[in-house]
Length: 635
View 1 (cartoon, rainbow, N blue to C red):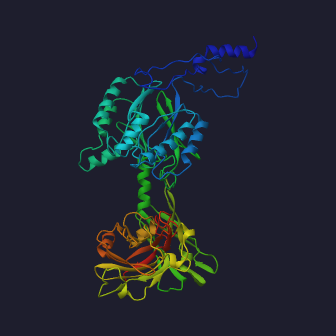
View 2: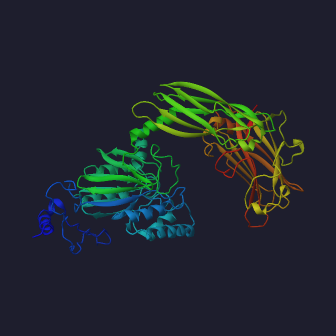
């Protein structure tokens, strides 16, 4: 007997410790298996049921650890939110990588299509696109409903037509999989029929070695907020938890687009997953913002979990409740304020002092290093080039930078300036945050205080010469090729105030008024620091859209109490508006001081055609960010 034959016989005799044949089982839903949840063995493999190692007379080039091929071990992947501001290509990238990783099957936690539509054809189109992605997966995929997927009765019905049940269960290798609907029938709720299903289902599978629960929203957080406020649990999640309490279980959810690992219900692991292509700022691990799939290996002791970023692998406790709370406290209590540079000159910007303040209430020493970015380099001098400050454990530090150009430059050339800072803590567990703060360098437009307010009749007779107007070459977006010059779409306007309102008088040039032509004003009335630190147009934003004075004229406004009037002219039309100051005071309770403003002329030359958008201030992202908006001050 040669040494390889002897080794083969020995390995076969010892196969329980060196390795065993991996028995294959079919993955079946209850419906597929006729409610019997039975597994079916395939024919035994023709390969020897052992790891065949050559005999070694001395040291061997392998360790004495066992081969991890327990027949009850399996590996699956979990994909999380694709939509809610989805970024094209990410989900399909994950599909390709899962095909390389070869999980036995793939679970989901919902938000598979953008949904939120009453248009059945649109929803059908979105599902066709998504099912095309699933067709590219080499293994089975299990659907779980998210709020984007079943946000209204039509979408619920469409789900049932395509996929049947909105909640269901199945078994695999002694593990029970429970897929729930967190939108039953409305948002963040589990209805009575589903509760009854869960109760009966868990009773029937009391002998499962582990239960894995999948749903879209992390309902435990909603339930805990209700109970903390002294209210009933509107989600019914606590009832579900009580049904799960006496069995080993793990819960997986999505929806919030950032990752957190929890412990609940007697120390059980609950996970809120990040994104697989859904809307995210992707700020990294400390924020819990990354694109990933979760990889689950089922062991006798329970699930072993890692997070597979599309560019790496992360452990399951990358963000815990404790670390997330510490990180959030750091960001909230170590803050930087960047004061705007507002000038009275029209000619442009030549020099000014940028004032910065670091406020530290975190309880640990915080250091800041930063520099300016986005400034034109020609003729520029900045002193000092970099800022370095530290405060701790609490306190305030201030510093200034002088910015100077050899000759004045247009304000538009300094509309993208940022102060780029690194904030770092000291101590045994240092935290590092890289943040960018927009720097506002602009002309300050002072609102004239008038004793006699204009009459809001859509005629600008009492306004005199208008102060502001489009440049000769304004930024034109949309169907820009249809724009034929200032006479085809441009504006001039003035703004003034009294103690009650801010008034706008706008003259629009549009040589051909067509249904769909309009003037839009966007007012960012948040406090100055809020506008600077977060240029996204979110809460506190007022939008006023005035259709050109045709038979279809209308006012579409998100600012309550606005007065308006419009009238046609030989060159286009005129608009007057009165915006209540109380709307600004609601956003600036310490006393309103200023707001930022952008105006747009929307021009459609051909009925049913696409519109050209001519901007006074703003950027290509004017509908989402206040970048390059004009600043209007009370005084």
